[in-house]
Image 1 (cartoon, chains in turn brown, purple):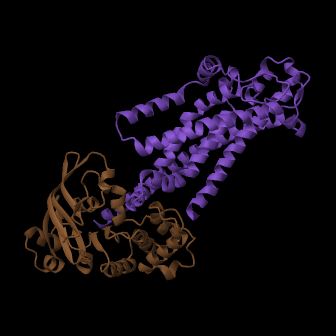
Image 2 (cartoon, rainbow over the protein chains, first blue to last red):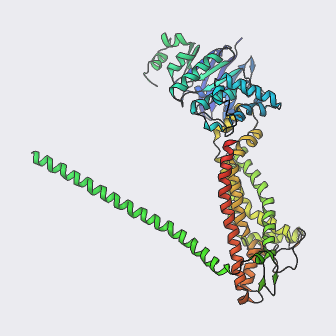
Image 3 (cartoon, chains in turn green, cyan):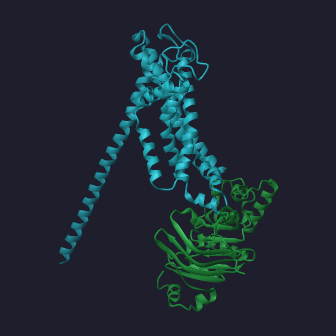
Length: 250
Length: 304
């Protein structure tokens, strides 16, 4: 069974046909990289999995997106509940202007968890998962803004993990980070793989090659090629893929 | 040949120098001009303040602020006018603040871009531009007469509230717009609903600016004369009002009447200046607290 699947998926921003007939299946506990030049639709595609595109006016979707074999765009789907299943990490770290503790606890509180002890335990667990605990355990009440960019991004990942999603969606999570923070986050992705299904949009092909099991190459709204990362980068079947990964265009 | 090249080089260097000098001169003139304008504005403000302070200082005393007026406004204090203004400010804010903030939240977080939004915005801007005397007449017609509240603190507060409403709406909208969308996205991504996002993320971030706007409205409302002319203001009341259905005295109105048609204009002059001074002090205190509060909340929001 596939964890995530898109079937005959077309997506429009107004009149603009942003995604064309995308058919793609992602297995559980894998890391899938979405690569392609700017404007190819990879971020749009990512945002379909937690229906964040719903927040944009004048969009249209045809086809299906299935998570755990259920169409998440079916009528009557509870979008807030769906988003609990999927955690999202954004390009620029965006912790709330709250304390470190409150940031990670936020997802728990808005989803109805009131027990103080449970919240504290889950916050600690999540922060430990992202290897940030030792650095922040003595300053949980301090503002999240006092952390460095890399720490903030790891905090945002902890925030997403706290609600115990099964899927993690990452939209260029390291493009605003320095190389050391980037490698820490990549290590993290590797560790999280055993428990979560991760989809990561990245501009950085080396990163895709480093962290992902499978890679999907998008171009102008089409899924050009989708294969194991090894195949894509060493033996691409489509010429366009070959041109992109060798830097002929970007 | 070499000499020619050297000449051309020298010429272009001289031209460069000339250009630099001209740029420096232009900059100096421009900055000088801006500085002059900036300082003149300060000078005007200082002149007004100095005038009022000098003329009104002699009238200020503890008695002035806490006593009732005596002997046809030539002696005594302006206590009831101060209290009246306070009641009106409180009343108008009780009305304008909740409605204004909720309206702004609706406009900024719920309404989609389109005709309706443009229409509401147009109407709000027009409301902001209505002359205050027209508000006064409207208030009289609606609150005093039609709804039968009579000349009262209630009628006056509602009228002043209407005056302050578009300012609160616009200001709150700006405060909400200034909240980076990325925070909303992060909140939605965690499964929060729109209401939860507004309550837990957007409002706390926008709060300092919203409060600042409210305090500035207070400063404005305390000085308005026309809206209270036909709706609440009385020249002299022997006792403080006990209910919102009674009339009240108010500082701007008091100042106006004392200076133009009181029983003894010349003798009341010092009191008039004293009243003006008190009014200005209230506005100044409002503006300074708005600044201080914004700084305080600005820090608090980060530490939350």
